[in-house]
Length: 289
Image (cartoon, rainbow, N blue to C red):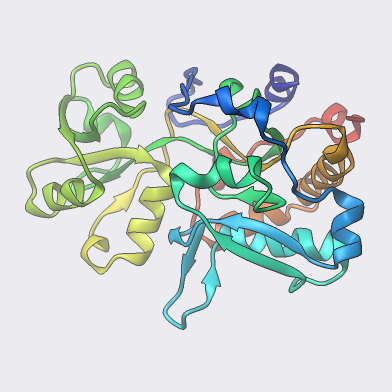
């Protein structure tokens, strides 16, 4: 299913390369045989009258707490739109904040019905949970000094990257002559940019967009339109036939949002690069699960 879906995606990336990304889970799955997910299927959700959705609250612009103390973000908007589609009320939803390490556990343990939490679609994870069609393609991008205008300007530059991150391989492939500086935290990368010690930082474009839009210390920097890898973000839900109707309903909504260009509009609203939104082919839009 993953190969068929990705084959139907038309992806525009600045360097016109799609580099494969295989994320290995540091997650012991041996306990799964003794654990049964208790999350609700579609009929149970409708009987209950509201969704229980895991989200991020510290990942602008995907999910965060705004200055007024309200939940905001691209994924929050998508979750509310799904509540409207499934239950007729965008407010028929209970949000559950999740840490990165708890995103899959919350689904597996049935604490949430699904998660909209910046979760990339990978084959190892698909052995544990079900995924929806992608609603966005994240990927490695660059936040740069004001003097940098194009990807070509980074050919011989100093670029910071998170140590042991997948961005390292992508940057080395596209910019082999660039000098890489490893950092352990985002804060360290921001400090190097502000001090002028590096020309750019390479990381998830959704994270970098959040920096440029939300952090006062980063307003002088810009995010290049070039994205040199593609990592699908999808809704995660439990495996099993009990959840097939829920998965089908979510996919139907996502496909309709593409054809209506609502997802593209939301990406633009949150200043996410809309050029890497997947475009569903007609065969995928009409496909039965």
